[in-house]
Image (tube, rainbow, N blue to C red; front, side, top):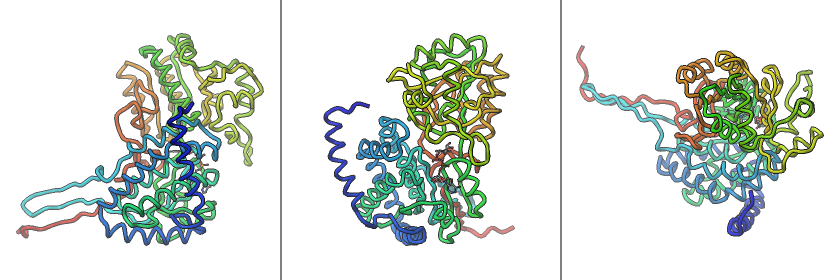
Length: 465
Ligand code: NAD
């Protein structure tokens, strides 16, 4: 993204504030050990509880405000540190943080009758241990603080080690501003050097009442085996189906928008396309017209060779050096030229068994599979989604097919005739979160999922049986 002069000025000013936060030697939520971070967050929980929902609303507004104020500087900082994704999308993911739900969304349910009044009141867990991914470091931390603190909790983060400086920058800024506006310290804390050991400490510590995990299969498995109550936002491999009733130009544009976003780092992003035979060639033409660049068989073979490597168990796994890289960098890694510099998305025609179809690749290379009809499209989409129950998309005007696919894949997000982004309130209705709770079967995270429910019963007249 080219910045105009005004934006450059703002980024420059912000970088000074940013440096100030990085230079603070200690405090503002960043601790050497997990135990220190947990104890500090626990003390903050007591103080937050005393201050009530007004303070929680103030904190939510402070976090939302900072994300907008520092979007450009933090976006730049995060991409420089992590090296994955696209700058303009790092910025946008911070600018949209106001779409995350706060205190106003908490469920308050009253039952009124002859005996009196009963409320089911959402109450906090206490300290939540939160594990966050590399793919959106600051947006996930910000959205989690908003959801968790709105529900009355405080939080300790064990962020991804490769994004730790971005996490420190944001956590310090959030605590600095939260203290300024509420007087509360350490509402969100973190471990300065997050490791698997510090993750294990969070899991074992009695003051951590709940875990919230956003990441891939390894960390989800570790959290579910930890013995601690865990809400898990795990991996996906979102398929998209295009049938003969689709508006093909619109489908091509929307798929390109979603699959190219942040170099396909989004867990909700389109990862493989199944197109029915009747419109297959027309869709390919529309996809090219929208700006996707077609790889030939030799180029796709070279790309596959660099994009997937054998892991330590001998299984093929995505090469982390390719995750979130741009099309031109990927082409260079694969050893071919000819990809236009402004190209956002590469695609190739493959069969349904191809590793790019069956594995979550998180890079802007999308396979397109020809299927005979909608029956095969839905069954192959289901196979590729692998029961993650994460996200799926369809481009169709056949209500029976749309409903059937939504029921058969049974994903947490299902989008019809829009890009994956619409599923998180960007070009579609609804709220945002970067924590899509899949493995433990909930929903897109909101403050409510981070609450317990207390039934509060007020008896007006003793009932005579
Ligand atoms: P990752 O699994 O490598 O890392 C996620 C977090 O878990 C990091 O903080 C990492 O340090 C930690 N971690 C990893 N393995 C661990 C282990 N064995 N024990 C303890 N901690 C461990 O994932 P990533 O590359 O950061 O993010 C991409 C993955 O996360 C993709 O699979 C994507 O689909 C998923 N994701 C899901 C959501 C969602 O809302 N469902 C959101 C973002 C990302």
